[in-house]
Length: 128
Ligand SMILES: [Zn+2]
Image (cartoon, rainbow, N blue to C red):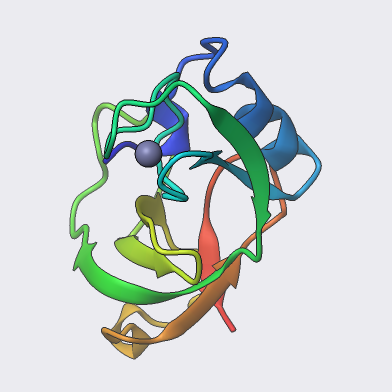
């Protein structure tokens, strides 16, 4: 899994990154096996098909797992993400992304409902 911050603007990722700028979550869907997957690739990671289409996802999901950073990340100057969550989207894929909009990290729970946070063009989630 990758965060959108580490996704380079390859042709395979460009529609995903452009959609984030519009506050939308767009992921590739395989036309052969119907798998919706993340990160965006030029071929389906499940069956290898290059027949893909972009599908707009709801942006809703549930926390599958998470970690709490107790120290600032030296590799991410200026960022103070305290909670990184593995979110299982309604459409199936799991994505790793920071959580925002939390009053207190102790409020984060596995299976908590979350949705895409659209404040900026980075993949982040917030509580519903
Ligand atoms: Zn496939």
